[in-house]
Length: 217
Image 1 (cartoon, rainbow, N blue to C red):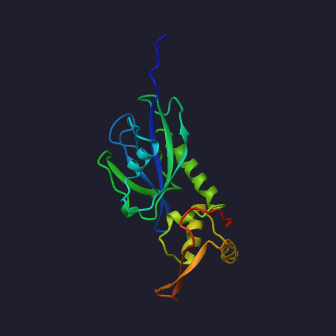
Image 2: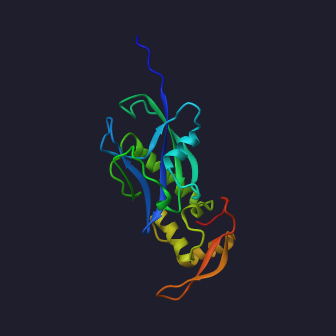
Image 3: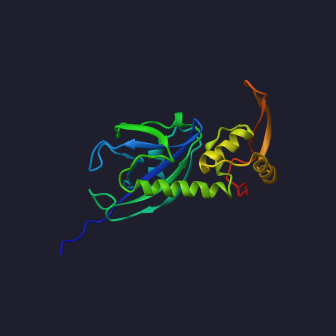
């Protein structure tokens, strides 16, 4: 009986952002291998001396000044997930408030931010990863202040509600939502207003930069 090769360890990263009133996710077009030309999430093998988070941050490729939220999503180890080798992947969930600060990579044919709720078929088992990442984000939206990691430092209440609605893919009652927000105490007024074609809107920020437990939904 032939000995089986040891499994390799990889990291893949599902990076979400809010762009043009939609939840977008960063995908790349694979340059070579059995899935050449297909869309997938950026990822790579874990090198000697690298931690999983080191690889995840390398794959996110964010500018140093950008505050990217990063957390482990899960491990994906189906023996048939990669036809070229036995590779077990640890997936990470990443959230950024600024897509312009996420760099491209010459390792791929293309990089794009696509609608996270209407993705094309993805290589490997990345469709399963996408579903798990959306489920995690929606779950944490209900009991933490994680939406903060997708917003600029200051925002209007309408922009905040839109962020929740875009991620959940459903409308929220404005009065009930704002009543819930007031009860959490997680926001403070910045003292500024946003000027526009309509009545100036008051700007808010989160009381704490770290994630806290809140009951919004």
